Structure formats: structure tokens, C-alpha cells
Image (cartoon, rainbow, N blue to C red):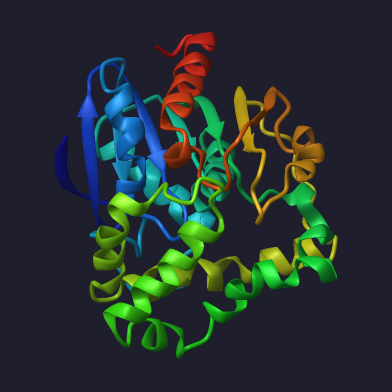
Length: 287
């Protein structure tokens, strides 16, 4: 794996590049950074060129004053792939990455060979996300917008490790999925600006999420790019029944349940995740 810093869209982005073949852009979620994809990268590098960046505000990428949400991240990623001279590419994403992929595919559908997504927010979830029995699952989205949040979580290494591990373990079905990298994740979020940089996504996304939860999200035409969604069977944050309206957002959709995992299929079962990714891009002729 090669670590690079690339200037694009007015910021410096850290990324890892590995392998040979057709390019795949891997977009992480929160609380993650490029390292979350390492098990998938190691399993696909014999077939694809993998590009795993830290989104703006995350990891070792620039952290200018936020907020910066999915539209801004999408513009960043298109500029980054320009800088890497990849005119066309596949995209794999999860969580925040899945939110970014939607405007990216709308902004430049001709550049995207296919979309492969694990669990993420999309407009069809609607008011279900704010139902009374779900409020204890989304408290962090409001907390992350508070000015004191980075100071509280970053007050000590123990605080930060406890907070990050709460989500990595609590949202996973296979509770040991991040045990080998928990210290690396803690070190990452303790770097200057990384807590606030990740939280900027929640400030930028707030108005759109409120509109979605009120049933007032703007109705956009469906994305026609070939799309594969593998949604976790045991995701406590985004239950599988919430996939019922995905076809309203993606008109060319291949949807199946990803069994025996929680919110992080790519870490909890990387063998199956890599196999599903490779099979999808083979089906759409991007292999």
C-alpha cells in the first residue's frame, strides 16, 4: 500500500492506493478513516486499483473550518479522482461514504461505473429515523453538533477510546471486528482537529436530515448508475426493513441482506464483503 497526499478542490487529501486494475474509490463512514478498508483492500488488490482516502476533516486530510457535508465531499472526491487521472471509476461506500455517493453519482453519472453500498442514510428512511423508539440510537448526531463535544471526548485518551469504541462495538454484531485496530482508531481521532473535523459532517447534514425525518426531503429523480446494496442483517442503527424504499433513489438496484453482521460488514466479514464487491463489478463489466 502506498500513502499519498494529493491536492484537490483546495485541500490536501491523504489516501492509500494499492493494487492494479480498474479503479475503485472506497469511502469510509464515521467513526472511521481509510484504515477501516484495509481488510477489503488486501483481498481485492490483485484485481483492482483501490483508492481509500480520508474524507475532508478526517484522518490525515485537511481540516479547514466546517461544516462540510455530502455535497462538498462529493465535489472533493471528483476532484481527487481528476488529480489521480482516473476518468471513470467504481465507488464503494458505507455510512457517511454512502451519503456522499448519492450526490457524487448525480453530479457525474458518466464517470461512475457502478455503486456498491453498505448501510447508509437515504431519503426513503424518512420519519422512521426519528420515531420515539429510535431516539436513543441517534442522540450522537445532535451531540456532535455541540461546540463542547470535541473538548469533552478529546479531554483524555481514555475518554476518546471509550467513546469511539462505544460505536465500533455497539453497532457491530461481531463485537471483536475492530479489536486489532482500536488503538489506531483512538490515535487517529486524538490528532489535532480530527474529532471536530468528523463532527463537521453532522452540522452540514443536519438540515437535510431534519427535512427527511419530517417527510419533507426534496424528491429527486432516481440515480440510474448500476447500484448494489448489501444491507446488514443485524444493524442496530439502520434496520434492514428500512431498505424498502431504496428503489426510489436507485433505479438499477441489486439489493440483498448481508447475513450475520452489524453496521460494519466490511470489517465484520471482509471475505464475503470483498467477494460481493468483486462479483458486482464483474457483473457490470468493471473488472
